Image 1 (tube, one colour):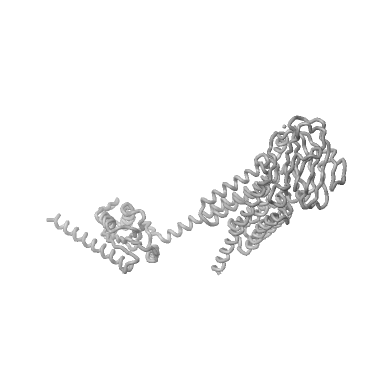
Image 2 (cartoon, helix red, strand yellow):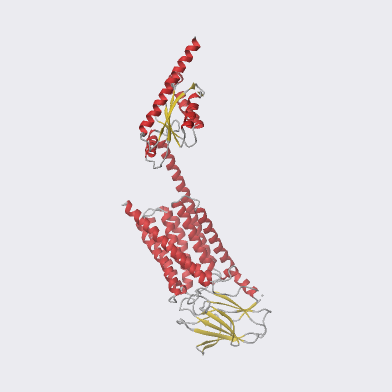
Length: 570
């Protein structure tokens, strides 16, 4: 069963990679194609609104006269063109006059006495129609002497959507004043930049974490913040301060709508303990939404549909996704899963935010300042960030505790050296090593006269000797060595990649050193051998050789001690 689930996870990872590749390809294509659009950049000066006295024409026929903007044209405007015309004032408030109007159109041409002075959209993009689903500000420089002349706006519309048919009030003045007027939305721009910056920092920070749920939790939080930041940043006119071609920014707004469900569900999957059967349907739904972004991009290229026409549906899909996720997780919470409370609070705030945004879109209401909406997004993000930090800390603490417990099961409690169980596990690892040439030095060590020390000074002093020899050995043997206590006073050391000469010097240092504790002095005997997997000698035989060498050393030290004692008496 585990293998089946593993295979499914591998397939899911492959699907995600394919979706990510296609998603990036369509996004890059969108940004590249919209780079062919050439809006006029910002300049400067004072402005007056031109709200009254407009006449509206369609197909050369007068539709309505003397209308006051803002005004909404009703009905399906797919492929239709309208002309809005009036006479400019006899005097302008200042020189270098700019005519500014915010539209949501497929194309716009501005005529002065029937002569074109500004053309936008038509024929300047490889797209069949440019991506102009959101509002866009046009700044048109009026030539000197245009006062009192007739100005006409030739407007080509998208297929019917929530933006089409809304005619906003133009302004007349210097571009600097018109831009400063747009700064009323600057707080929203700041929100967008903060979201983007927070997401970027979280994403980069996550790369410093080891692979696994901790990295994924912080990483997907970063992507959520980036998606929210892209949405907020591109939904207000202050973006024109930073961008020359703000049409390209709208692509990231669509991206955010289509990607947010995926980032949300992957965040939940990696940050909370929830059954896989509950998460899987939402992952599939998020993948479908990502796939829809790819399909719509391809369809727009062939002129079949536009992102702007799917904006309502994408927003509705996002709302339904979050609502369904909220309900399912709320049921989990009521069944005792208290861990998901933070996400329920965060997603509740986000759900309310999306609901307000969607209602405003359906009502064709464009807020001058959506601070409360973006503040809600910020609060939601803060809650998720706090949970991610706590989750990472909790996982790290659990990992440390597990590692400590695991070390306790592998470590000799008295000396800190590896115990018998860890020694046997290491032997199996050495024997299964697939390296072509991997010599392992085997060093056997025995404390001389430990029983006598216990009998004379007490077991506590004997324990001090055992602890002392491990500390002293670590000063002599290489840092890559592994020390194991395999008997009462017997130790075995494994040293990888060491020569016979080095091993001989280490053994000599160990057996010639006179060790001293606060209770007594003692000596140790040692012997060594080598195990090479490719040789005919087994590991047991190599270990017995080291053991025999150690006992030969022990016998030699006893003979030398007896000889020294005899000479001293003589």
